[in-house]
Image (tube, rainbow, N blue to C red; front, side, top):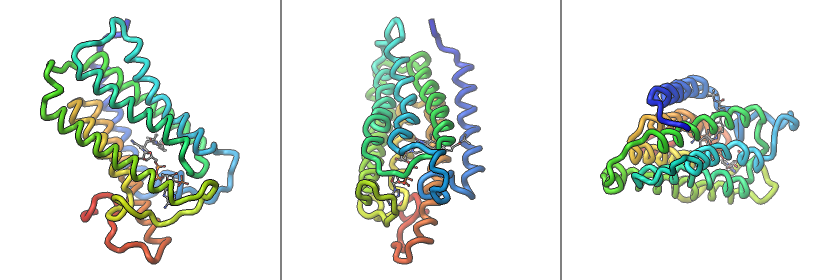
Length: 256
Ligand code: NDX
């Protein structure tokens, strides 16, 4: 049966950190090509409806850790912290896999990116789940540790912002519409990337709550992946809408 190999965790986390830097160097100047940053919808055969694409892409991030948690024998009952943290991760991806895709009004998603996205979700789902279920050691009172409580609070706050902002974006379109409008309300009042800001806060909260290398590597990856994207969204809006609110920032309210 499976056991903890600390060297494996270190290697996979380092590779995740390296992928984050690769992302940053690739997507700082040019955005990743999906959504509003894709050239015209000219090759309809190379894409899948947003609904299927997001479902398939994110499913492994839910399934892999959920299976690891369910199939571990003997089941990991102690300490409470590990199961709780693993459940938080699965909870986010339950939303992203089974709820978000069924309401999205996004444009069809490129198959090629879907393939890489899925590989990434398998990789990260395995790393986070494997670490929490086979490696992590917490004292029995971890649930009252300031790192756990403050991290959990940030996680919940970020998740709330992320879900609320994705809802505001969705409401900009009627079913079947594919045009872009100026997002309004919530944190969009201050930043163009409100949904991304929420997601970043969420995963840094998770990293603090788990106090682990894999989770910090993933939070860093998220920052490098959607941070630049928030900046490119912002530039797109400034270029497209002459009446775009001048005081709005890209990712961090009042700052950047
Ligand atoms: N999926 C994370 N890298 C990614 C998909 C792409 O969950 O090759 C990372 C994720 C993947 C990426 C994933 C990993 C790295 C990949 C990358 C592609 C290339 C890259 C594989 C897995 C790669 C290397 C080199 C390392 C191999 O039509 P539309 O779609 O634009 O409509 C949008 C709509 N909307 C508007 N509607 C009307 N008016 C407007 N002004 C609108 N603005 C937007 O709202 C969408 O339907 C919806 C949201 O759009 P957008 O662009 O704001 O968000 P989106 O990027 O689609 O993300 C959706 C949610 C969001 O909450 C975000 O926080 C979360 O998913 N997310 C996204 C990406 C990554 C991630 C989280 C994470 O790292 N944690």
